[in-house]
Amino acid sequence: MAPAAASASASLAATAPHHALAPPRASVSVAAAGRNSGLSVSVGVRPVPGISVVNSQRRRMVAAAAATEMAPAARGEGGGKPFMDEMRAVAMRLHTKDQAREGEKEPQAPPVARWEPTVEGYLRFLVDSKLVFQTLEDIVDRAAVPWYAEFRNTGLERSEPLKKDLEWFTEQGHTIPEPSAAGTAYASYLEELSEKDPQAFICHFYNVYFAHTAGGRMIGKKVAEKILNKKELEFYKWEGTLSQLLQNVRTTLNQVASSWSREEKDHCLEETEKSFAYSGDLLRQIFT
Image (cartoon, rainbow, N blue to C red; front, side):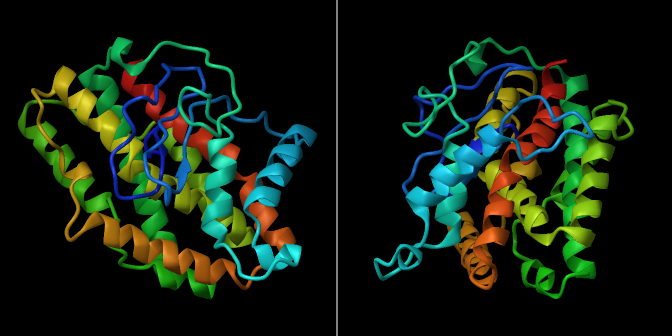
């Protein structure tokens, strides 16, 4: 989320050209190319507080995806698929057919080419993104859950690049805003999950980082073309080979999830839609 409102195949490549993006308040995601892809983040409406996130429709979606991608060993077939494949399967079902072959949602809006970003809105998005990425980094550094420490210094960290980008905007004469309600709400929610619900937290960790590397990059490029004279921000640059950085994190995520029960895995999958909605709240600011 990302985090861009990207839908992202967690992977190495750029997003597939035939996948569409939708504007604010619609369900937004960009499916990335590549069979080994990871996940997506979409712009939707966050669930109303007090109402269970796990409704019957979501349970059916998760169950169908998990049944498709579940480790064959669990179905008595021998062998096994990594949990990241299950996460991708659930994410793809939140796309439209235009965005991904596995998509199940009806298209609701025109493509990204019709969006009109503003510098002010983009700055709000960058400020909130910095807060969210810094929160993720702080959580794994503290490692209240011991295996969070496995995700330190992955090379995907974004708070420092974002700090440099905001300094650049200041040099151009722009005023940097304070984090918005959307950013602070998401950061607070991540802190809460990290203490009491590690499986749900990992769902957000995965979606935020991997979506940014695929669909998020595509959005960043299009925004730069429209309002930044094609300048590439540090937010969209990584040291080392991005595909290898992603594979390293994917491997670690699979190793961590291998110790989870089926119930814990399903709980992680059920959090996907909520992670899309929070990231979508951030993305929407680019265009408002």
